[in-house]
Length: 201
Image 1 (cartoon, rainbow, N blue to C red):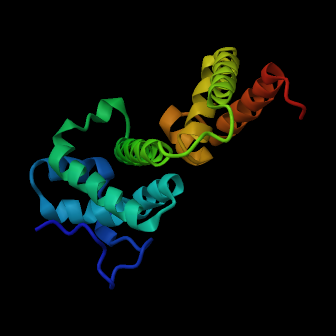
Image 2: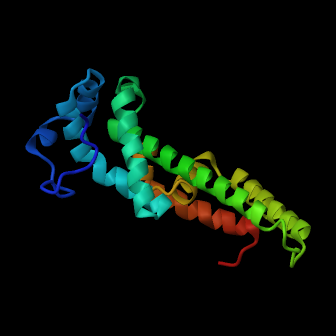
């Protein structure tokens, strides 16, 4: 049976010596072959980062743990799909975690939207919903147009950091560039966005 939660005797951040001498890529290859011991080592190695990324996006601890469980189940079931030529194992796993967390956010938002629509049916509107919707649409279009005026490199960095919830180091890993380059792209991108949006710095 797969162990998808850390045992009390295995505190976060303490990896076994086997993990230190075995790459994540090699562990994934072994997991693809059904090696549960390799899965346990991979779990111990990456679980803190996976849960940390998900918690930054979802905030709620219980939901974050649930999504993390789903991520590791997906890793177990789909390890054979990992292609080392397209990136490292950590990037593959964290991208999967990010996608799962975003899916949960969208699902929760859709549920809240449905509840809200049902809840307001019996209440008279206290403000002009049409005007508000138009304003929001215009603002989104302004942001979209401003983002389109960034360079491709700036747009990638801004999207990952501010919309994707990735840290600077994670953005650097995903884009395969030095962290200093990421910080420069983010700074220049945000300055350009402020200028395009007409926001005073």
